[in-house]
Amino acid sequence: MEIHLKIIGVLLILLSLVHFDLPKRFDWKNNLAGLNLFNRQMFKVHVVFIMMMEILLGILFFTSSVELVNTNLGKKICLGLGFFWGLRAVFQFFVYSPKLWRGKTFETIIHILFSILWFYLTIIFFVIAFQ
Image 1 (cartoon, helix red, strand yellow):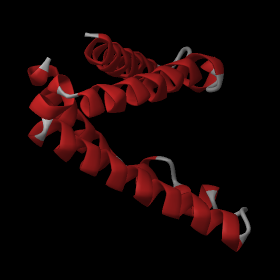
Image 2 (cartoon, rainbow, N blue to C red):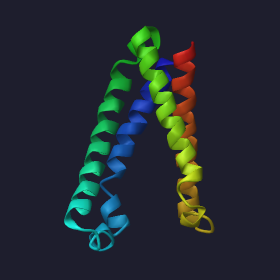
Image 3 (tube, rainbow, N blue to C red):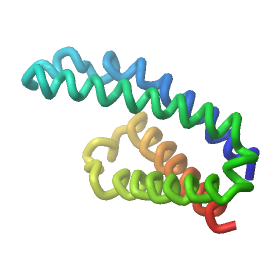
């Protein structure tokens, strides 16, 4: 399971880097302009902190996979992360509207890839937690 945590570590660090492209890809300058200052800044701050958590968790998983797999504390952390990523997988299907991706090639590919990622993370963390 340690190798899976190392893979997840790399994937989360790569995922954090994707966030640098989001403002341009989704035209945040224009799309967020209608928000009041507080909501616009809160949105941007949350994105930065999500990126930071992805990087920090990625480093943790890559450097501490043995401890996460083989200690009670590590298993408890993995249990929490299993619930976290499982809920993220549920949101992929029941919170985001299919209108965002259905009938659009690029968006459908991204939807499928991220769905696979969320389920992979969920399964790995639950397997570690219940070993």
